[in-house]
Image (cartoon, rainbow, N blue to C red):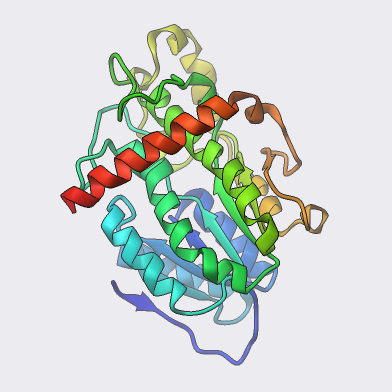
Length: 298
């Protein structure tokens, strides 16, 4: 891993934003910088990282950005990243923005389907490594970026992947559902330690990932809605950062946990209806099996 670090006498709250060099992650980082935060951007591409740091510094009016290179599709590399960041002391905010959705089926370096790895397992691993650092800076927050694709999810967690053909929207929705269940469970676990855990749904936006989608990403029953979906993903990316930024910084959310913040930047309970105690227990068992498999292959 390489990094660009800034040395400054300015004392600010510290944030880590994953997939922070473009799209919603970068817009979230810029919003944090404008509010006085120091922001560590995590992503794979060094050139994009340095360009993003320059934008963060410009938004802050000072040297506020840092880039740390890591391939978050690799759970082993994500764990090493977490260990490194944890060794730096207290952390005020973790924004798990990393994710992905693809038409074709892909695998991560440990052989796990890629959208499951990026949308659930990678942020799970990073968060668990950083719990003590977040507690040390309490009151602190974790913001997990979620998605309305949850509505298309198959809620069966018996096997690593859902039964039947691979449809990117449904597979990603299932991974996001698993992570939302983890988010709510984690909120209860960390409340006594002063760490709030929130989910944020940014809504549809014109991200680089969205531009690569084709109609084949949808289960057949949803394909008549492709035109409507394409219209949704033409929305400005900057507007989509409203939810994550509100979840990260809104003073009205101080002391509150286990909530979902919607695209408008306000609390929205819509996605909570998909999470039940039975599903949470299934996800807990499923996640443990996947991580054990990844550990054997890394």
